[in-house]
Amino acid sequence: MHIERLTIEAGDNTFSLDLHPSFTVIAGVGPAERRGLVGEMLGALGSGRAGVHLELRADSGTRYGLLRPIDGPARVISLARGIDVTDSFRTEDGQVDLLARSGLSGRSAKKLLRLTENDLTTRSQFEQNILTLAHVDQGRLWDVARKVTEREQEVAEAAAAIGSDPEDAPIIQEIERRHAAFEEAEEAHDRVRRISLLVGANAAVAIVPLAGIFGLAGAAPALAIALAMTVYSAVYWRRMEAARRHEQEALDAAGAQSYLTFQINKVNGLLADDHQRRQLMRAAEYHRSALTEWQLLAGDIPVDWALDHRAEIREAANRLRSTVEVRNPMAVRLSPEEETAADLAHALLHRLNHLRTLGGGESYPLFLDEPFPQVEDSVKGELLELLMKASRHQQVIFLTEDEHVASWARLEAMTGGLSIIEPSRDEQPAGGDEPRSSKHVAA
Image (cartoon, one colour):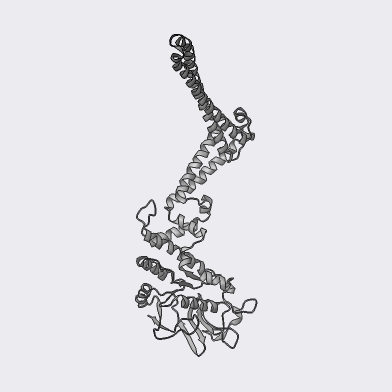
């Protein structure tokens, strides 16, 4: 659906705008005028107020006049045939409301059809996830996703082979790790205990003769050595007991009374030979490694979520590549300016695609309300060119007071690809938030 003309009756004055079927830039209008103008057009598409009229062209090419006279009911006229077709556009409650026919209220339409700077920079988590994954090299991304799912399947198969669940693999690994730590501490304690017994015993034997020859002062070094070896042995004993305690905590968590019980029962029925157990642990290790690789690429975005939205991610990635030159074949590395262009381009195209099929196959115009005030002029030019191409399939109405956008539009209007409307300097607003009367510059 395209708006060809907006007419507003304001007392004795009539305000009229002729819009380009693809791309119209309304330049030199401030925030209040932009807000008021968008409100009038959306209001006319909805239930609207009296005195606001539209000339429309459906995507099929049929042209309609939507009339809301001040002193009469709203009507829809087929401009080609000159007949009243109002009944075809009535809602169940008898209103002529084109937005309601697509399930939109005035509030939801304003939120969806009007795009501001804040709308472009504030994304839903869904859009942000799509964009994050679209920036990653797609070959590597989906290769790692495939690896994660395959490793997950291997864990499931290894667990099924021993009558277990995949979640049991980390339990087994943790028990084995703590048991190995306990055995290492036990060996270290035994080694230290043997040395300390040997040295301590010799030192103790030497205390008596040394005390007889040199007195108690002469025996003090031997006594100190004996005490030091005792302390040394106690330290390793404490380490061994701590490792034993940590192992028991893991066993308790798994419901096993001892490591021997764990080996026999393998935690509530985890019966398997050593080969199968090692296969399960190896599969779990490979799965964890694949997950780590995925997290380096995608952060906290789950693999399953990415696979469910694979088509949308690939589509976004293709758009990024058509917007920004990719120099590194292994990863998309963009400058800050390119990142800005790519992010905004994705947001614009995502919204346009949504509006294109919103009305059950009938498109709706996109109203851009000064969306690029903080964007560099070089990036702004790329985005305007992108909008120019997109408007071939869907109407775009760009409201701005940015002179850079106006200058670009004046040049493009000469080609016929768009039109620019600029308010006359010497005329006053028609009233309220309504914009000034306009001069229409078109090819």
